[in-house]
Amino acid sequence: MVRTPTFYTVSMQPTIAEILALPVVRAGKPEMITDGPLDRPVRWVHVSDLADLSDLLEGGELVLTTGRALADPATRDGYLDGLTAAGAVGLIIELGVHIAEVPQSVTDAGRALGFPVIALHRQIRFVQLTEQVHRTIVADQYGELEFARTAHETFTDLSMRRASVDEIVSAAAQMLEAPVVLEDLNRQVVSFAGTDAASLLADWDRRSRLTPEIRTGSDHDQAAWLARPVGVQPQTWGRLIAPHCHVADNRSIVIIERAAQAIALNRMTEQDRSSLELRAQGGLVDDLRHNRIHHEADASARAFALGLTPASTYVAMTIRLRDAPSTDQLLVQQRRARIVDAVTHAIKATRNTALTSASEGGRRIDVVLSRRPATAGRPGPDPLIEVCTAIRHAINRIDGVKRCAIGVGPDGAQIIDTAAGLAESGHVADVALALPDDRPFHRSSDTRLRGLIALIRDDPRVQAFAETELRALLEHRAKHGDELFTLLRRFLELGGNKTDLAAAVKLSRPTLYARLDTLSRLLGADLSDAESRTSLHTAMLIIDAR
Image 1 (cartoon, helix red, strand yellow):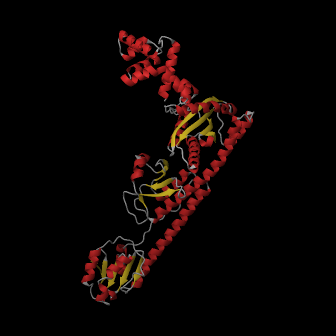
Image 2: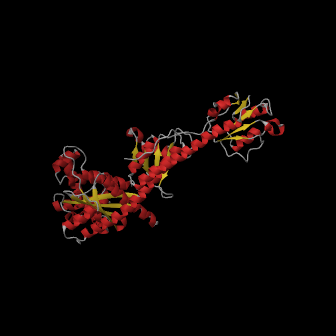
Image 3: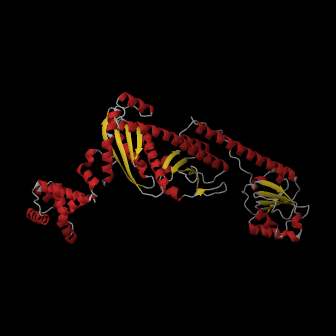
């Protein structure tokens, strides 16, 4: 269970309107001389008859005066300008001591500035007013400090207990009593807490990019979100967002900032722990690949101790990727580290376990997966398709990754036998990386001749072979279009069956035979010969691969 703090009613600094409603002020028979915003919070009440308060005010003060500065024409006209410039939010003038009424020039200035000026027609004890207001302000400040301390203890406790990111996000949502969303730098939702997920997360990518942030507690924007970065600058990796918080009070800011810090700490802790786990797992996979472990009991004991779940079937997988080159090797290393991290998180997110090993600078990742069986009687995706889809989705979201492919070797009942299949899964992954299709994973049966061609297509000898076989047809294609080239492709795909070809291209037999004769003369090849068709088909596949 997540321990949440005792909830307090959020107390705010008193507003001018609330101060005017106090009995001590009402006893003075207040009169609004000039209108202005009465909902502004009052940070402090300052009593002074000085004409110039610019060095005494810090902003947010309500000024009380008996009007001495307003009795002097030399200081009267610029008095309100000085107050507004110093950040005062309002003025209360007690009449009868120095002035009997508010001078017209002060009234005109207040109206022009939109600055609230209130006159008291009876004398009051200023000390009673300041005591009441300051007691409220100090109590509010104490409440804020107490809340900040409680929030700090709550998120520190979550960090010490190594709570998950989901638990931290849920705690923040409970404290805010509003939904909270954690996203990464690509605006993908990593975790969220709140009801009505469909409405909360609908069109999230676009909304997140277009919605401005509330920066400070003084921001009031119904179109903005309260959000804070997650991670240490300049290497932030996400944002924690309260989408329904459009007016940020101090407590909301404290909750979001402390939760963001706890999530960043969680990530650093998990990365350190993951780094140790990956090194240990990589060492075991390397031992298995090089036949340094000969007994299944030894292999399974080490694997299970490293978190692999016992299963009836294990699967060898290899992930190959192609990413953007860079002269900044630190950037490349950070990207490869994020890729390995994405793989391990995707496996865990699909409720699977695995041994993982990265090699070739992170461009190759070998995985021995403990295959989770499909749930009996419940329709759903194949667990292997599910985990491979999740892995590819996670990797392709990382900036700089151009393509990734997954090769899958044979299943095995023993870990040693399965690890031996990493050689096959590695070869399949190499081939799959060069293929145009976008399957979740490939097996050796998916690659075959196209896979071989994909591997060797850049060899000049292979290119020369294709050109030699099809040169005349390619020249004809360049001059007259694709008609004969497409006809040859269909002919070869149908294994040289002229009857099926006539039906497929909707040509009469005489017309079809005439065009095939033209093809045979152009190519200088007997199309009825199986070896000739094989050679032409291979050349065609080479052209397609390029």
